Amino acid sequence: MRLTPLLVPLLVGMLLALPASAMAQDRPAILDLPALPGLSERAKAEAARMLTRNLPRAFALAPTGQFAWQSGGPDGEAEQKALEACGRGGAACRIIARDLAMVAPARASAPAPSGLAISSMNHETLPDPRFLWWGPQRAAGVLVYAHGRAPRGGDSRGGQPQAWTRHFNNAGFDVWRFDRHPNVDEAPRAAGWLKADLQELRRRGYRLVVVAGQSRGGWNTLMALDTPGLADAHIAIAPAAHGFEGGPSHGRQLDDLRQIVAAAAGAPRARVAVANFRDDPFDAQPDARAVLFNQLGARAGGFIFLDRPEGLTGHGAGATNAFADRYGACLLRLATASPPPRSC
Image 1 (cartoon, rainbow, N blue to C red):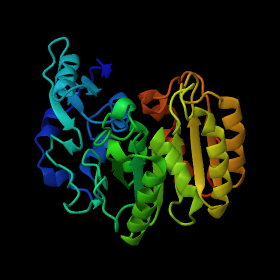
Image 2: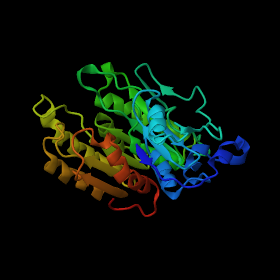
Image 3: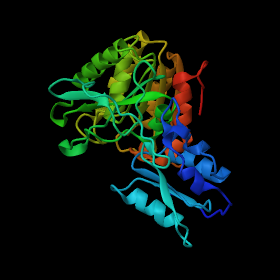
């Protein structure tokens, strides 16, 4: 949450009464929240930050200019906390933006049409409804996000992609999830589904295809490097597929990673980003993995290696807002800029 008790004479009440047509835009209205007339410069900066957060999220504003925003938590909590923080001192606050929609003036973003999913009996690749929808013909590209494999057979399907992907979505990318049934979610099988689905999304007209994932999803993202043209960029966050340190298959991790690096010679123009974190129990040999990832980067069309960055620890560090703030915009540039950046 960010609260600013800055009191500036504003004509916010008049603004909130404007009809939706007065804010009509070709792009989703929520993206224009930081430029909303009447907001202070501090409020505009904080509105831009809110747009890089996952849902639920809410932005509250008072006619005096006082504001607050909140993201995360159970349904309804973000809105309640934003109103409470904004209203300290007796300010009459109201919600002006919620999730993907402007509330005042009211304008919601169009959702993805139904029937778009690519699926089999055991997996589904589909647009995530918690993200803005652009459509293949209008989108700058598509980002396909692959979740990790939960321990003890937990079901990770339906999980919200990590917050850094908001940078892509706000820049015009559709965000799709690659969901797999936990009972059959083995790495080679999932890699086959993912490759086929990436081909299908390209066939549907997406100009730029980015594949990304966390943990096992990140490992599958790297496995897809063996086929040219599947994706323009591969972003692997804490890639892993061999369980905890000391587990029965963990000793094969480096050998399997060597095979991925060797197979990636088939897609030399793809851009690649890898993030490794300190104190990751799925990464028992970070120095040895770093050598292999740098070998992979030497073959890529662009490469960023976030190797144990300061202040970000543990296997789930890529899911934090701190990671999104620090690296989200840079990962977007890796996928889209010409030439791509070499570091963040």
